[in-house]
Length: 257
Image 1 (cartoon, rainbow, N blue to C red):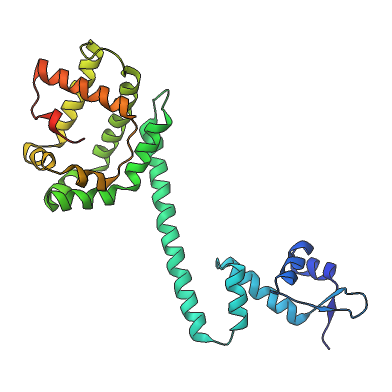
Image 2 (cartoon, one colour; image 1 turned 180 degrees about the horizontal axis):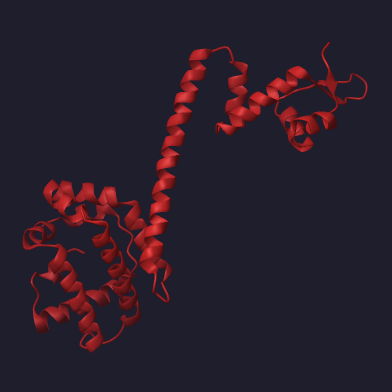
């Protein structure tokens, strides 16, 4: 004989809140029998099985709308298999994204260790750079060659750590010095460190290839800059002064950076 439960009994038996059961009834996901006079909900053992299916599909990450369709077509094995395949692919993608986010957080925390203050624009620029590394690599390969892209991005973990720390150091100091005279000792030293960095990682062949990239091609990359237009203008002026007074291994002022 089929046993019936009140909404309270059913909620207690299944560990589901009364509010949730009411909602499932409203959206026609789990509709119990109702007393013809009082309208009280009466749940059966069959409803218990349906609820178990709902809970299982929710655990697998399906939306309530998807679950409703699956319950309607529960005997359609091909649809079920296809749905599970799609769900697996979706979770694999989420897994990759979570792993990337965790790696970015670890890399950021390690890089800012020792910094007393970091502006939001610098932090966003750094994380954006991590997010778009594959895009940057493909862009460089497209507009220069694959060999250069490999040389720039295939570096050791220790080299990457030094680069990341240098990035925050240069960005923070640049922000602090913006507006200072370009001939000041601190600004000259800052630009020298930029030049040394470029010289360490960009050889003359790479530089010539980068210099010939058109403005429209640069805009394709759409990299987030931590600097405002005015700040970028000051930085270019600082490079121009350094080039005039001390010379540069490359024509920095002509480089689209």
